[in-house]
Length: 342
Image 1 (cartoon, rainbow, N blue to C red):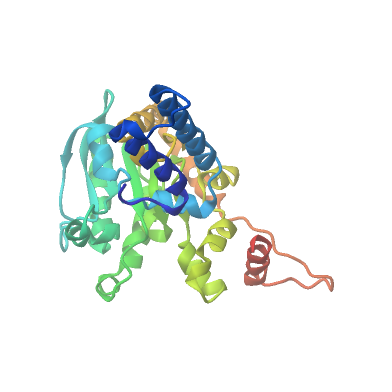
Image 2: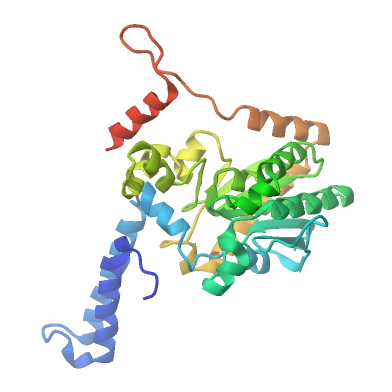
């Protein structure tokens, strides 16, 4: 199997044994029938799969979120939505293929969809800039969102990016300003906005299209201000501690729901979204339609107020007081949390 993850090895070994037995039935145990041995192995595979995927660590979920066979935005645009018609360009500088969007239908609703898009192979990843958008990508997204606002179309955004492109060219074209403008303008758009984190949700690159009335997240996706590797490099001066950092950051769907940073977790098929893309697309469609109907029932003024308050409520923290009554700096509290996980 291509792209197997370390924790999937027990499943792969059992699957290889099953395939070998089917190809060479003469190797089966003499004490039981061939069909019985097949059933035993199949049951063992199912039990092992369930045991592994129902007890994933934060780092394992990050690995699943990055799985190269995981459905990307364009996959959902074709399977979750219908009649997708892509629009291009920011009308200022260039077309950014790391950010895709256009008109589509969700059930009976006409909507505008936007998403960050990765590539399946090296050639496509270069074209898509590995899913990390330049400033023109965020300006294109804003142009499309303003168009949707003009015509009264709900906006749905799909997030799957490690972050905005951090290169010199992006800085020269003011990436921070482009994202900041999106944050401001998305709080003011009068149409409903729903965001779904479908894979990686990295830093401002994700938030640049993530200010919404409802924020959903797939079961094995993550949403974080920094990648586990980046956090490990800062706290431990060693990126190999990424697993510890992932646990300390509390970036999994379950943690985010507990902290009220997301509104709902969209269940994935056992084994991850890539094991059943059609089923995953159907699950996402059900959740998007449910939340869209709820948001459409709200008056515009109430919807805008709720959206504003939603994001104003984020970012609360508690500072630790030491035995002498002195307040510890924020990085000391983070380091203490990281050591507790170690």
